Length: 103
Image (cartoon, rainbow, N blue to C red):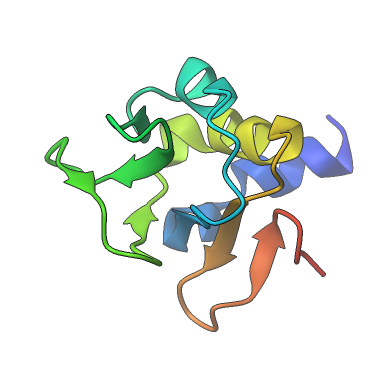
């Protein structure tokens, strides 16, 4: 097991949330391909996060929890996003752990 894999499966992952900066979204839909349970393209061609109830969250900066079972898919979405617009952060301190502003 690699260190990166350990970080992805760590129990602290349960307290992560994801959001999309629509100003940077290119509408490629890669995120939807990786994690359709979390992301969806809207009629405007941009990606948005969805609530646990499958509701599209269109408010700017809207966040949704990252289910532990989908963490790898969400992280891969952030890594592969051509617009660098997917942000995954810890809920506890709002520090970005995956995405363009990750430390």
